[in-house]
Length: 632
Image (cartoon, rainbow, N blue to C red):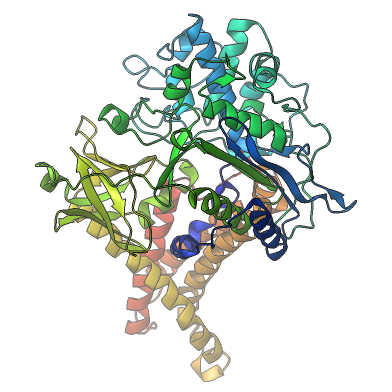
């Protein structure tokens, strides 16, 4: 339902660069590979203890049989109930693959096609696409996240839906996020409402509730004997990062997006299903061609240009230590999951923790992958290629152009501005917190990432594409889903300069404030005519700091605090309005200040900082941040 970072999706308002650096540091932490299951168990138990994570459900699987299936740690802290291989964990967005598999099964039966327009199959489902006449939203777009829709809004996440609520009622609860922001079938932006619409198509065609169809046609044939979409036992309790404070059970509004509960035994069978290319005990549940199709993106610009890596039908590529995995991760409040496999190496794994602790999740994944990879030979590097003839045409400035969450687009636009250049036969990216990111040419217009440190494993597959120019401009595909659009140099430089000007002006307001406040305590230094010119800019900056602070504080319970009408969400809205009002009041104070009383230096400084505040207010207003109602 929620990938690993969603619960803190707004926190980067002030910490984007720091988080990027932290992530890079974590990648440098390489555990010593365990040489046995007992040693791996000890590593995982130590991680749980060190990170205050109650428990983990884990499975390491080969094509013919599981190697290890276990539940470690505690399922419920209050009762000291232990995890077992039968304890149910929430697997979050890993659930989405069952919508894709269901659609593929119906396509095999000739009941639909991945290229069918969604409006043709379910005209009763609302969405808006201004390009529908020429570029309709198709079934494949729902599953590869290429509809162009915004991700579900916080209000949708916050809705506690009773198990009796139908999928159609869930889709009707709030449809405002289902509006295409660009031509469908062009770029990928993860969207939790796409697979549920596909699941509703399954219901319309089969006449069955989606959950019943999955249980009958996938769960039971695969051998997932206890997997289900509803609250049931024996299940783990999910916890905050402290490992002590429990979350209530989350009755997800759109269950196909991330509601499945599954045990380690269930997931071991599921991973084995992929390793055997859709077969279980020699019986083909889905054709092997369906598994191949699920692993291969087809609808993005990059896929159409020949790039194989990316997000397929609820199944994506991930490159770890030189190996290419397929699978999906997932998260709910208090639970994080990863399911990955390498069919070429006959191995896969699953694990799920009952805490939202990202550090624990990262360390558990590294330990498991290190154990698996220690017995495998890395694939060879692609042969050295030369830069494509068109490379020089792509040098220049780019900005992110496929935001998952439209609410944070304003921030991505600022911190994501990137300069692309070519040097010594390689492509280099320069962006905030990541200078000289190097990509080596592979073939055609595709590139693979080259790490800065020799001890780090280079990518063995292309994950960067110079996209064919089209009517919308010139674009790049970076990684598995990020699309970047070229902008004129003057625009990029202006953006950088203006952003720096605004930030420095706000910092100067804070630095200047103690001097005039303390000076005002002395009667002979009081200057009433200058008071408003000083006070309003300070109040504006403090309002903005309050906004950022509220977002950070709320990030621990982001969905509940901001997805509902609460004191927190109202305070966030009020703080943005207060910033705009204080910025306007600052401008009025400067305009109305008497020339013969206000000192020239103070006037000039006030004009400068007021201009910065007005620029910031206008920018935030343009992106809908002023008066932000996160609960609406």
